[in-house]
Image (tube, rainbow, N blue to C red):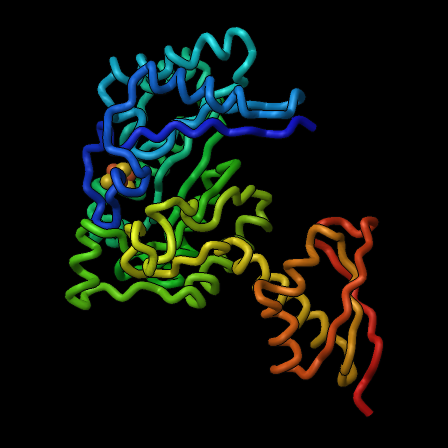
Length: 346
Ligand code: SF4
């Protein structure tokens, strides 16, 4: 299988008709100037020069902002800039992210013409009250319409949703995930809300009108949603915002994060916690008081079993008084495991 490489091109706040309360796109993408065709070409050349693998699949991804809300001429300028790389097969495809209310047939025809393959929609929630509360400027109905149209045109559909939006409960987020599953996206990104400087949410936070989730709460919420997507074979390609200079520990000087469930290995925390639950469930099904077990799993899951900072092993000992030893076995499929009792309590 070809290894996938992404060439990210950030299009900050360009054309975005909104000011969602949680967003300061200029800070998230770490740049504020207008992107030009020259920038696109320079970025692609830079990445291509640094990719080592010869047998690779390369995708140019226009992230940030709302690509299809940019003025048409600019969209064409940026897409045109990537075409020569598609023609000479140095780049295989293009992906864009945009808002659900910035999709129509004319836009999708344009995206087809310029070899866009994947369209990711920033959904955030399908609950109209929550969408209004954070000034998203679109409705749950827009999400449905845009998703169906994108799929009908043959694009790969992606969704991005958030957990911990103002007044959003765990159940609201489960409902959003279930609504999205019905729309059959291929890929999903889940972002816990961070409070970013110079946003309305930051003001609400300062006035105690918004209380962000803790890391633990965000992990709990995310893992249920990830489980729902997993069970429906939808690929969760990201959990948590990408770490950058601006999206970093709130205690570091350059960080734009004021508060919220920031963790540099947030995805690992979610996956570790899912492994912990699965292991505890299996142990609970054993009809004896277990003292020590062996967990047999694929090498790639060993860190999830141990947990970040050995958290899973420590919790199993502290809460259930169970010791574990791990045996790597590459015959076990990734994500699966077997358990063997090594010792019982008298
Ligand atoms: S639509 Fe997207 S880019 Fe625009 S303000 Fe909202 S989150 Fe930021």
